[in-house]
Length: 28
Image 1 (cartoon, rainbow, N blue to C red):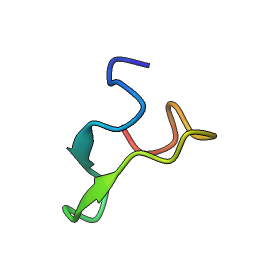
Image 2: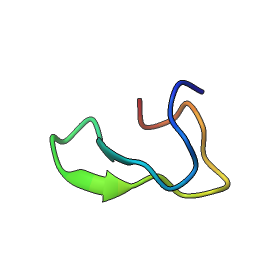
Image 3: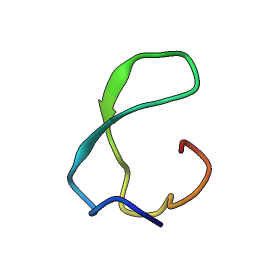
Image 4: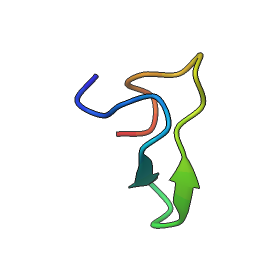
């Protein structure tokens, strides 16, 4: 994935969340 494990990103709903360590590309 393009993000680090604990980097905050916007998911497909536009909500800023912390990327879960077990998910890489589901919420890009």
